[in-house]
Length: 276
Image (cartoon, rainbow, N blue to C red; front, side, top):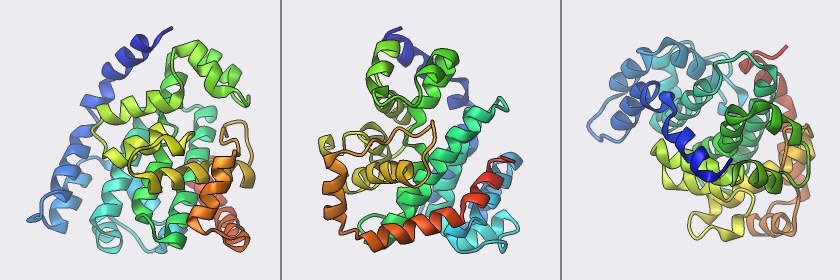
């Protein structure tokens, strides 16, 4: 397989022209200064599955409103346009690749959700990037791996957990998951900071812009492997991560606090993804 086949697969994804009908409406409304909260919750309500997942995510402890959000109207009121916009994008992508009730894919999403939470917590602690944007970038950082799962599940599953994953991906597909994910993000018209976070989360120093959020996502993935190791993790610690810790002024105490908060949300993560 080569990169042209990967690009063709991304171009041919039916979901990019179906599910995003609602997502396009969300993006249009949140980008319109004359729109109202009523406009936003009406468009989300057209897709009940998406609405239910957004409400469920809105009740996660990360957002500080656990158990208080009962409907889309409350979600918009409590969380605001940007958080809801990012949730809808993340959940839309989740549903694109969750047609099969496969536990392996759900465990992969656990990893992505852990990275998202970690990125959001780091953003809160450092105030260098918006927590909501960091959360979305973390949630989508490994979207390229879902593309590879879809292209050849068995072969791709066989190379997970190896420290040379990126090299083996390139042998199998002609590119690694970070590059494939950035192609998907561009195709889906996601913001440039998300595209670059996806593309460079394994090589943050190569990003020529939005370096702050790229660094936050990169360190979040490496910390996810440290905090909660699993076969789906691929965030190998490198000297770049040490440099990021210094750059973000994250102390050992900060990391312990983030780990404790992440562990406290593990049950919520499993419930959100219907894991038993």
